[in-house]
Length: 344
Image (cartoon, rainbow, N blue to C red; front, side, top):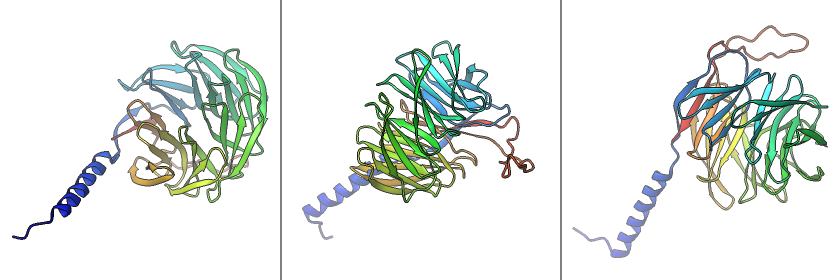
């Protein structure tokens, strides 16, 4: 039997060790279980409060609050018609919802969930909502007015607005006083100063089209924009140049970044979750496409344990077209609303 030279042995062992390490670090997500919430109506974005193990789920005219340790509904934020999103201000002990149908923002206590008040906006259809801890302001992004409304979070007062020049979708705060937002109708990203309310930059997202979900790697100053043409565009948050473009699934709406595990997630309405790994400085790779369920287009990330929550439901035929709704969406089958919990 011939012997393998000693340097070759070391090389073989190194390759084997690297393979074991790569395998152990591979995400391998799957839908571990489902939280059935039932009821009627649609939904949009959802938010996790990892410190209290609570999941805030927008659902038609209310926000359902779920204890993710027991999968039980522990509270509700009522009278939030057409609610789109929830922003949490932990330093102030407050939460905020954006209510699209009556163009308002609801304030509530984070501990008791009691409603503290409701603020009517001079703008139409607030969609995304984001809290900036540096300026201590909440920003409601108005899809019907192409603007962002700035609210003093402690005083519940509107202090100004930011014209965006396009229909805003999701937004991200960088933790240094800047806010970034995707513009769906112009395939661009806008950056503005949370304190002065001045627009700083407007950058194209080409080759991405019709962006929706947005997340940020604050340490490396990278933005992740999920686009409807099945691309995730990685953008430099300081100069706006495109760093990388990665393939994702159809009908994306939500994007999240897990800083602890260096993972980017894209929830796709086709019924998949794209998982992307940040391999190194400006190096990214798609590591897996996880089956979820059709309609699972938004998501929330729990950074404490890496779980990803994706809401969806069963669908029936769409209602008849009308002048106001020439292309109606499929109807939601009553009682089927569910939150999928993806874990590795």
